[in-house]
Image (cartoon, rainbow, N blue to C red):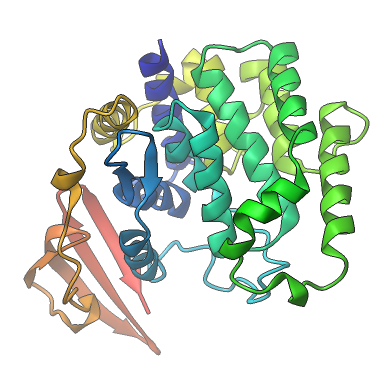
Length: 324
């Protein structure tokens, strides 16, 4: 059943800190990014799919910018070259909550273009989304999965894509460094070659295929991406037995995603007032605040070091550490 697979995906995606023998007190950045994306999901009023509600998503990203484990703090400002290694954390909930992959694909494209115009990131995101959708649908055999992925990338029309999504680029395509049409086709052919095992040129797709081939024989300790862990959970019972502090909470998150997928969440119940969001760094140690994104929270520590200020905040969903 898809519910069982979804629970395995979410549970295993949450084990990175435990696998790396961290204290597991605060979530790694990719996991927190996935949760922030989940909080930004909104069922459509017409019951046709679940989409990212960008007014909230933007606020979540503004807050997450100060997350102490934010690996994107020093990212390049070049929209076309930024590879967006963390898109994998955002596409997981998009795919899980949409039983119609056409809608999931739309949301993946829009979300990746929100961060980068990098063609490789875009096409890889679509392929990985299709891979996850295939697993949730109950197909685990490598041959059938690769067939689905090849069909997805072969049938992906650049012309239709640009007609539909050109408006979502943050920078006009005229400013692309090089020939966009040629570069797009090169990346598409490269990914087809990867799927045909002619060459492995995309690390995360290569590793995804290896997991499907070898299952739990892949070295867990070397996996540093939440998407790859989510795939391992589908094939490996061992990874689902790992204990970590967030396990009960993540089970609730899994149940919530299943309800979103089945259209059992009233969109009006997710409305929040995002006016006058307090600046957390203006708060003092011991303050209790009502924050639209974090809910009722307590500042348990605030300290300064060199030119930085750090605050530790305890919420109903766990501990957050922000720094600027």
